[in-house]
Image (cartoon, rainbow, N blue to C red; front, side, top):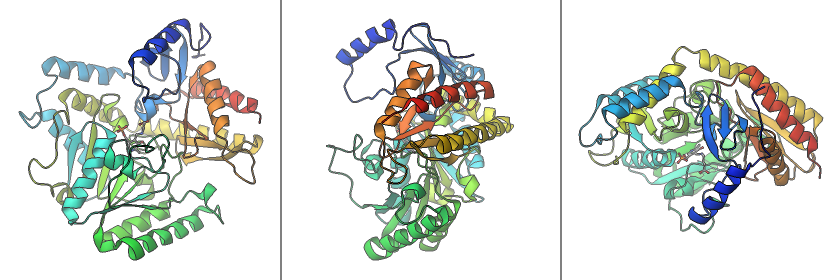
Length: 443
Ligand code: PLZ
């Protein structure tokens, strides 16, 4: 048994720290749990009161290779001992170049590729849009319903959900258009993924031809599986049709793999499973194993469109973060972590499907590989989103030793984001807690 609770959750030390936090820290940053962390290893988090939790959040899909893998800690420490920061735009260093080489080799696509390193997912999204606009000489950007791309102005504009992400923060960036995402469970008229995929693609082409103009469109940005939007996979057919359309019209296709990347869906990148290569891919989260680093990777001619000095930043591709990312990539290299991730995916899928048949409040169970979620509804037929159910299950989880996150446009989803090094026994232990939480949910 991994879970070990010494106090009620939150414990006295966490409560004290929360009181200090409320006084000194701005209200904005949200907490999924009231638990203050002391340390984390593998798939286990220990709080300041000595309670041990199983982690189904991985720092929002970051610790895919586990919390503090020895190789990553060692590589980062060694890099820090050599140089913490110099600035790639002042005195370049090998780690940045080597990471770019490795990322270019790892992302799908046959032709020559190049990479740009930045600090966060939002920054990667901003840069991908800048690059696409310069490359095409066009302005419009098309994104999708339920999408999440970050909190800076362009990334926030591309994000769909108003509360809490956009409310009060307007005006938003111009020339951003939104098309429907093939969210089969909530598509009016049909739940058949292929039919929904076809109907959404028709709506997408109609939007471009009747409102924007394909020849005015710089980029289309999509998450292959919605992350914050509730773990809804785009059908492979939809992604393939987008790929064809963008190629035909010279539009830059950006796959935002910030949450889906680095094994989260059972392959290094989700696009691999649809058999598509985007023109640009945005990466962050799992890339640095916890250190802040992100990337835009893609077709060399697109990546080279901005002039020298046109993109960059002080910290982008920091040497310590590069060393950590190189160590993370090495952990994925022999394929055993991905194979384990797929095995976890099978276990999670069976368990979640079983809950969907047994618990009326579980309206949908879905995902890709181990990136899976359940969606709570008040009634099966009407599918009215049941936000409080997801909140109560998440609370039950942390009170019983599992850190789990909600998601979804209606905040009625519980998503599973365990570190991919979690053992099958740990996973089962955590799923038992989650199941007990769901069984307790009453109107
Ligand atoms: N694109 C697909 O999932 C970040 C957001 C947490 P940053 N998702 C977690 C929060 O409450 O802000 C994300 C993502 C996708 C972009 C981003 C943005 O990545 O590193 O948080 O900027």
